[in-house]
Image 1 (tube, one colour):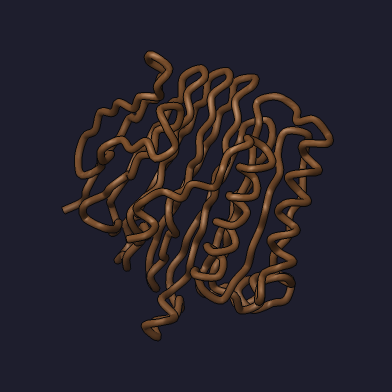
Image 2 (cartoon, helix red, strand yellow):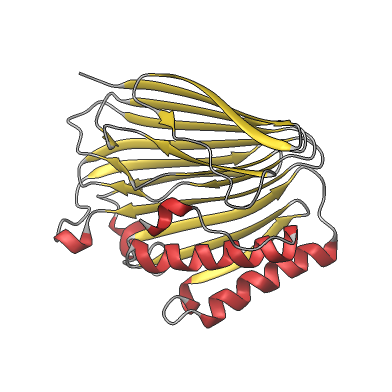
Length: 277
């Protein structure tokens, strides 16, 4: 039996407090709102009780952030794309930010089991003055369990309309992509993190974001050669990382997040409480 789940999450400002409300169909929901940084920033944990997707499953997630609101969304664990005998497992996330809104979209990694057939889509729409900090982390196979990614197909689709479009197809049979120095070079974790704005960033602010990310990379003990930061246009800063497994990549991205919060929003790097569990 396939699972089809839908979640609509909406952030608004009410009496100087960011408030989250949601509706859901199927096994997909948001836990209690938390305010470890005060009323202005609402932290939420997105939960999918089955723990993963098999062939035929679909998760549709939509989040809207109203004017002046600041939401933070993460997950309690990895999203797992399990082995499929043919049908597609699909996750779609649509994020829409109103003028002056902020969103931190920080789900933990997606794990692609060998023989999966999966797609993961993320679409971000930004009004003028809105800003979003987000990441996407994908791991192929389970190296700690000696289960390499030797079969299957995974499609990653990331888009900020008019600013950035990325569509990657990873097929376990594509040795050139997986092993070549021009491809993944034998690495099995890919991570992208970006800061996107609805209005062009001031040059000094953009340079500060790049410098902060590069300082984190330069200090990392193992990923200096396989991580980079760039600004493809005046409204985005992007960090890319290749790693042998999830843990070092995630540690680097969390450090970049802390640096960006300080440089771009004058905020401390308050980590979601669920990450410490």
